[in-house]
Image 1 (cartoon, rainbow, N blue to C red):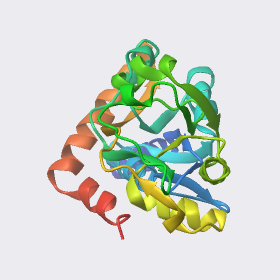
Image 2: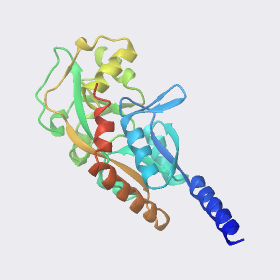
Image 3: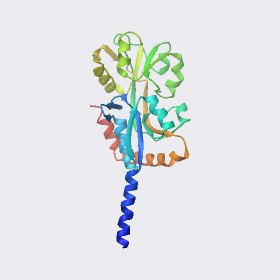
Image 4: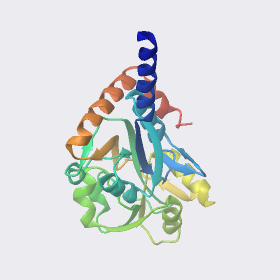
Length: 244
C-alpha cells in the first residue's frame, strides 16, 4: 500500500511540475534575435530563454508580438519578456534578470550618406528610424530628444524609408546579420547600405517580468538557471549558432 501511495504521489508531483507553465514574450520582428517565422517563433533570444526556463523548471508558452505590445502585456497579463535592454525607466516597472546574451546595435545609412558617429549624441538633428518601443541603453535615452524619432514595427519599412530619403539613419540590431536578413526580406540589395563603423551600443539582453513579490521568486530561479547555462557554455553556443 505504501508503495502504491508513493507512486501516486510521484505521479501527482510530476503532473504538477509539468503543468507549471509561463508565458514567454518577445519581439516578433527583429531577426535573428527574435521573430515569428510563420507559426514558429525563432531567434537566439527566444531559444536562450526557453533553455533558461526549462532549466528553472518552467515550461515556456511562447507568444511573440510587436515589442511595445509584448512589454505592456507583461505588465497587464504576466509572463516574462526576452531580449530586453536595460534603461532606468524600465527598471521602475520591471524586474531584470542577469545578462542573457549580448547584442551589437548598428546605425545604418544609405550608401554615400555616411557621417561620423562616436556616440548617440552624434545623431542630433537627424531623422532616425528604429523599432517602436525600443531603447538602446541610457546613452540613447539621454540623446533621444535631440533627434527626430521615426518608429515602426518592421525593419523592412525602416530600410525602404532610408533608401527613399525619408530617414538619415536607421538603427538595426543585432549586428550585420540583422541587416542581411532585413535587406533580403525587403528585396533590397545590402550593398545599397552602409553600416557605420562604430556601433551605437554593445548591450546585454535581459529577461524581464513585472515588478511585484509574486515574480521575485521566479526571477531568482531564472537567474540561477542563467548562471548555470552561462557557466557550461549553453547560452554562448545558442548565440553563436545565429552568426552564420
